[in-house]
Image (cartoon, rainbow, N blue to C red; front, top):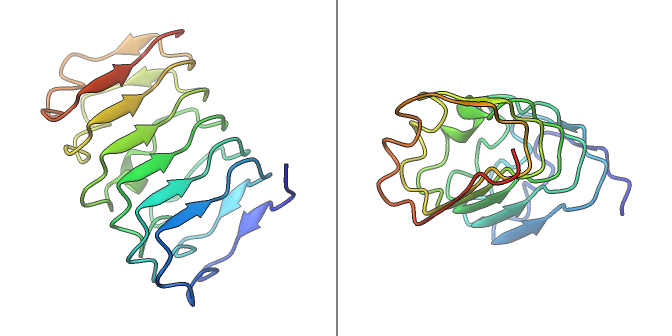
Length: 146
């Protein structure tokens, strides 16, 4: 475990060639909007095993090309729908081991390229009809242990 608890805006602005960023196992509670600005080559972002409760709408601004996002083992109580809108080709999304309680048909409407979605080990009690309707490329869905 590391002790990084926040990431300020523009933290990686000089690392434009970065393709993978692993921030797993820190104490992140805050990621400021634009923290990943200029990371146009970033493909894999691991924010698992932190203390994130909420993601602001502009948190991933500048990292639109991420295709694999790990948000597992945090304290997210809802799917970060607005924050995920920015991604143009997100294929793998891991939201396992959070505190998500429900899914509605708008939650995944903007991430239509998903091939793998892990929502296991949450508190999901309600999945609205049509929730997965737009996910035509989805090959792996894990909603176990809810």
